[in-house]
Length: 123
Ligand SMILES: CC(C)(COP(=O)(O)OP(=O)(O)OC[C@H]1O[C@@H](n2cnc3c(N)ncnc32)[C@H](O)[C@@H]1OP(=O)(O)O)[C@@H](O)C(=O)NCCC(=O)NCCS
Image 1 (cartoon, protein in one colour):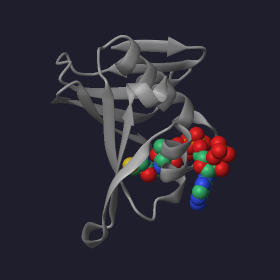
Image 2: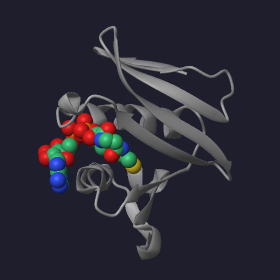
Image 3: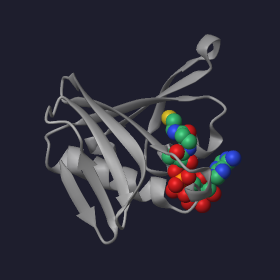
Image 4: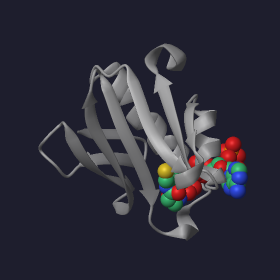
């Protein structure tokens, strides 16, 4: 996978499309990573991390996630995207919810919220 939008690039480090390790770049600088697993049933599980805390809260997470979601739904045939996040990770939860993800379950014992976004909800 290679997706480019303005100065942002998502580049796959892995040849296997069922499990993609993705590097995210601003200009020519790698700032973090995303992962994408094919879970079957047209479902992908994703994650994201911007490595340098100084580069968080600048809008990159939202923009890179939007690019990945668009690619998964519009070009790679997925119909559902899932992820999990710590209950107290309020910044991450805010952007997932802003992008249309809905909570599907809360696991208090492991402090985790499960989210999903369907293509239907996205469009
Ligand atoms: C989570 C992460 C990917 C988000 O990317 P980012 O570039 O920092 O996020 P953005 O700048 O696009 O958006 C941040 C949003 O969160 C909001 N926000 C920041 N801190 C917040 C908080 N404590 N509570 C609620 N919202 C918060 C900001 O106001 C902004 O919202 P807005 O665009 O509606 O104003 C990034 O912060 C990161 O890598 N964090 C560490 C790893 C991690 O938590 N990964 C997710 C694990 S599932």
